[in-house]
Image (cartoon, rainbow, N blue to C red):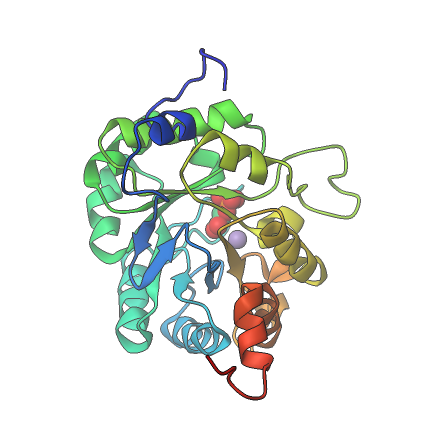
Length: 292
Ligand code: PEP
Ligand code: MN
């Protein structure tokens, strides 16, 4: 970090120098702690489409090992003619899914005027890539105080992204999780939707004490590429994943949003198994507990 870095409240070096006892920095979202040794898995549909769809996906991702449920009730769509999300009824459905499964809820807020309303239902407020530098929104979620998932814009440098996080921190809220979700490069339209910037994961960890997760779904835009991108993200040092999943019996072609990048709960379960910390994997594969 140069001395002109646009952030200091979230700076790793300064926090370490202050010998803060609360280190490593954990972000607590519902039943999850993000930033510790166990990767946190956030999974669910791109959009809340109906009660039946969302409850089915929630039960399935819970069984697969996710601890937090994702799902947009307010969707940032490229065209105003596309499905925009169910709005407040969608939030009610997410709350019902939480009550039934115990999963914490992560959902997007796009409008500073709706932070209070979305924040009544959410355990974590997601700021989407398109709103990464919506400074009024960043300040509002900072003041609100609930955990924030800040996605990186596909054209943002590391400093721009961390500068955006600093806006939330400047309002007194350090409960921030960063999310790399793919950047725009020359490969678009070839074989993927965006390019997962794996290099940024260790770069984030060097620059800030805030945890960072990876979104392999938007980063690839391709169901078949999601598992390898997910594993690569964890190998690069990410503290967790946010993944789009469809119901066990759902047809991806009928999804109202991003069906082409959704995985099934069975594939999610394989990913969860693969990314467990090594000592946990060894413990569960040992036939007999080791004697002291
Ligand atoms: C999402 O996660 O629902 C989403 C819209 O992603 P992004 O903001 O990264 O495009
Ligand atoms: Mn999506």
